[in-house]
Length: 391
Image 1 (tube, rainbow, N blue to C red):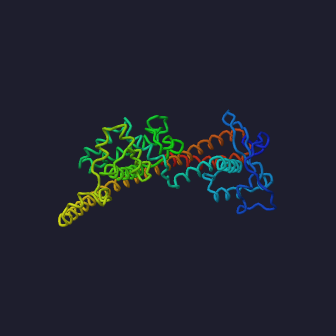
Image 2: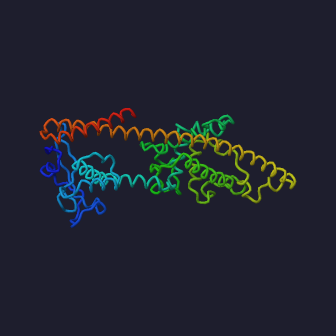
Image 3: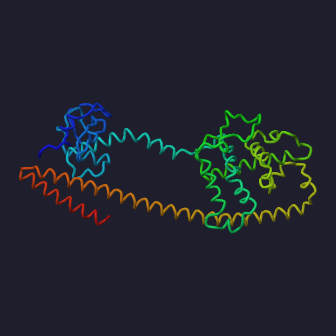
């Protein structure tokens, strides 16, 4: 068979000094012993379809010329390391595929590893997260929705397939992770001696989920409400709210936002839970209530709590059930897309291989080699037709 411009011999004449993998010599070369380190690789400029293309090539295997490595050994190596679509390939093509995989692993594997580590590692809350979150929630874009959510949330909203609250926190999350520079989101809303702007930078973004952001807000809100009780309690009221925050800067920041937006105060302060009041032993409401009334109120509160929990569990179950259905549909769609993509890639390869065989057949004078071409062409055409029907 006449050597084309894609053969290893052509590579050796045209390669550039851009090595990305080296190997060592050995007396024997078996498929079991071959590793990626055994292939000495480079890059070469070749002519393909009238265009100059840079491709990866193998210069040597275990320090020896590629001619000394058997075709069957390369096939076995490709199967063992997971190189796809290696069947029905020539020796030159197998060497090129191996070189390309080595290059891809060197260039892209660190990127894949970093992304995988980012997905696996939990995203931890950082000191600036509650501050950026409140900047987003109380911004002009979302503050009206926050007020409506707290003040006018209906049972229909709660029991709907996707509640207003879920949509709200989804939009909060979108704004929270948006890295577009914004003074409203990236700066502290007010100065205070306890807030160090060098340590608290709301412009630093952590990729929290909507559920995590909701949890961060509820934690900061609960801490603020406890500080508010201490702040307003008779005999302990003072000018500096931070004295009653127990060192919690996020509670102070809620207070600073309310000073800037006093219209939010009633919304944020409503429905203070009983456990906050019980923190003060000399609360007059607790002392004056009869013991029997306390027991009745406690029993009623327990019943109400149980009813609320059952309702919440039902909503949670429906939400998780729908989420799981959506996840399965997505996985099924992705699987179909990947299968179609793989079939399309193989179809493209078969088409290109057939065209190359036709070109080589035109210039081949050996009858035996032309018969081999005919046999391979028939096989590839049948495979191409089968793929076409499946697609």
